[in-house]
Image (cartoon, rainbow, N blue to C red):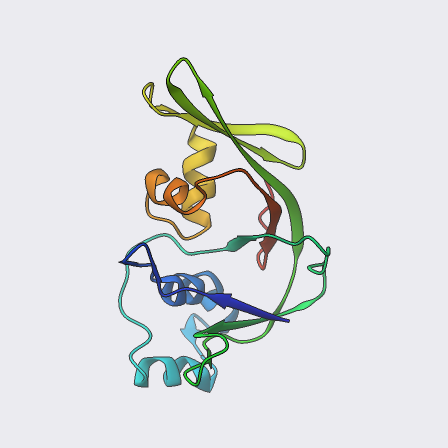
Length: 172
């Protein structure tokens, strides 16, 4: 199933193409040398890949109201979905696992609190004003391809229910 990725969010480059390639490149190592499929070189030729030093994007968070994303389903990684410039930028990979994720935003005494629940377990939180940061939140944010917690919550800026779709073995 097609999984579309943005190249920009709120006017800032996401580098999702590069971050996703960084998450799968070890699958293309033989005797410590990289053997990439042709599409890797296509990405370079189309200038989709550039050198980034950010952490790899190893999963994505999506709404899934019809419960379509399941273990074993194949992921088609695309940018520019539903346009003439639509482009598959990575090999087709299976969904390794999914996890339920919920972001709840509350207001209390003038402070905006954001709770993140993974598989119905209160996992991590961030509260503006107090700058309470749980290491697990930063890990989730970076693993989802965002550089900062602020970027993550600028994108997820209202209550959200969906799934974490994993193409690696990581689970929270």
